Length: 83
Image (cartoon, rainbow, N blue to C red; front, side, top):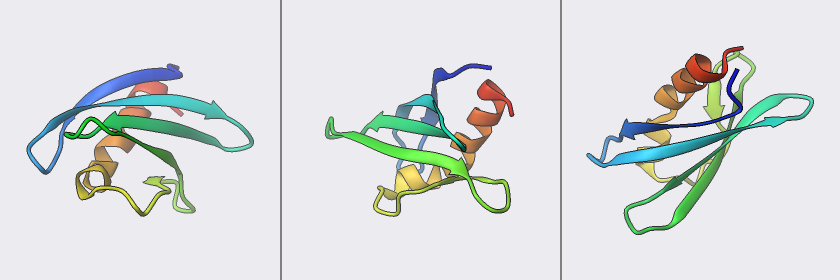
């Protein structure tokens, strides 16, 4: 199981972006995700399982391209970090 990894995703706005994941160990397992936008700003979010056991972003104030990447981010966590 990997605790730090990255993946490149082609986002809905047409930009390829590298998303960096870090597993955070606490009572619940979740992942800190960081990515740089096209303006060079670092954007961070938290990905954790919801009540339906699906990986979901916790932040609501994210760019649409980040929110739209949520299914791919969850799939990457499943693939790299396992359960």
